[in-house]
Length: 150
Image (tube, rainbow, N blue to C red; front, side, top):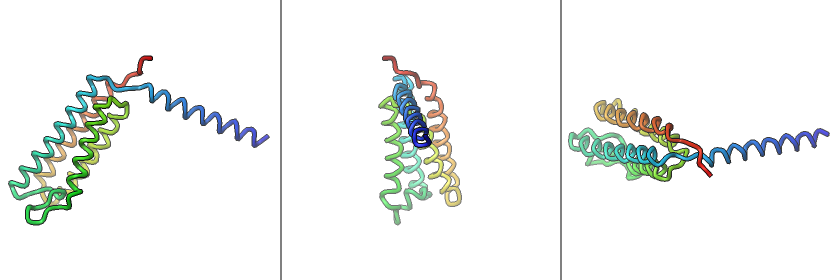
């Protein structure tokens, strides 16, 4: 009897999980909001590049770039670029999880910025502003999630 109840419970949970996955699969991001999200993250990449160039020019580079005489390992800025480009690509695919990916990516940018607060407060502030703008843009794209029509 108990084994039968456990089997029924497991099958009900499986059906529930599969139903939720199907519901999420049917959701998509509208093309207009996908473009807004992708443009937001392309602008974020351009802003991060501008911060990197200007901070290196002022001899106050962020930790992930390092000074010209002793640059940071190549993977530090590469990780930042991969996160930003990956988020833009998630938006271009009109995936329903793209706004969530955008929020997580902007928090990641914020963590990169907070690490610079002690050494270069001005550069850290610029990075925090860019991360906040990307966060707000990603939150706004939640408005474009809708059910896919069959």
